Image (tube, rainbow, N blue to C red; front, side):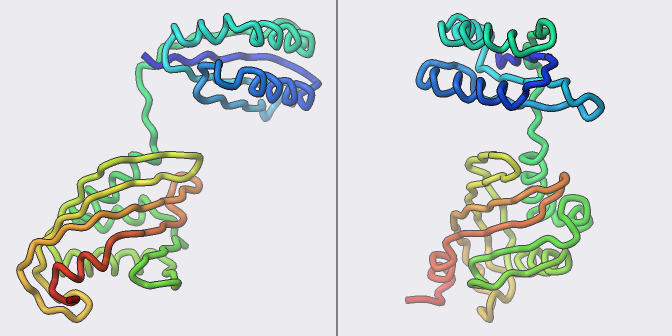
Length: 231
């Protein structure tokens, strides 16, 4: 079970504290078990900080705590604090990555399900879309997104299999396999009734909870060959 430790402390020397954390990261390379750390500052108290440290499990956290480097850094950290830091140990019982869930909603609910009203909910009004089929040009705005989704839905009955998702910062990367039956005009190609498959990658950049920018990379040449447009 994933484990999180919350460290709550006050200090007037955060720059020095920050350097100390960098020192710990450097000294524990290849040995530390922490997978993610986040530090926040209290908006109402500039000296109040909260650090959230994530581990694969409680047992891995204990291994991390018992490293000699961790103990030395902790002593230096306490010396920089106004009082003793407090620690809260948490077993993670729910971990919902909201941006990743929103990305999945696009594929399942909008693209396949046809709920175009959800575009306003998930995408920023000035959303920018970069699609390999347009070359270097990009499209801006929600009407372009609606037009793109409608065009694909008119041309194919299709499904998405989401093979893998990776999140980093504000970016969600989705690797997918698309399978569709050609039922309508597509780039001037009359309906063939053929079933086609292609793989691709979509990167959504989120800002303020909505998709601000997207990049689409997929095997359009394979699709065109399957439609008989290429030799």
